[in-house]
Length: 175
Image 1: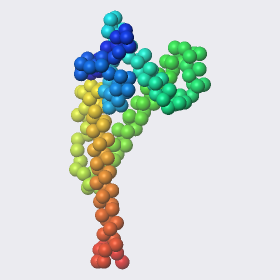
Image 2: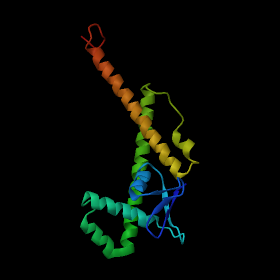
Image 3: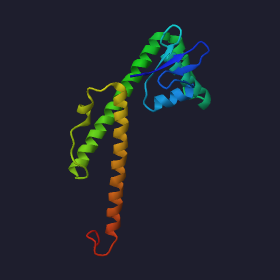
Image 4: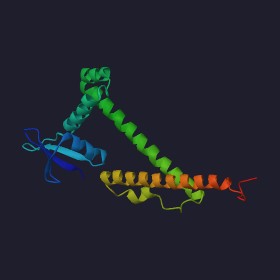
């Protein structure tokens, strides 16, 4: 479920979940943390989410200078909605491809680690997540990444340990 943020006529943003005013930077942090937000005009109820997200991007553009090419922005304005729809579809498609690739890499890694005897085989997590909402899926992906990082650390430690064993007298790796 999306966090509801109310935007008042004085441009202040109010987080209804935590009952406090927030800044654009705080909204950006929330999004980076995996939360989905929805910004509504406090008086009319109009959805201002896309306008607010664009404002966050433009603030980042100002701070980091030239994150978006000027020619791209000109084309976006020049061709209006048709170009915006194209960009939106392209970005959505690219993001879906990245997520699919990440899940496939995770599946292959788990299978490989299981065959190597480093972890026990488990039921695929994707089947357990099918009934959950999108925000829970984002949290599950973060958990998967954390688990993969931990497994990678453990594998690195094992490999380092095997490398040290080869250098000891009497170890099987030494001639």
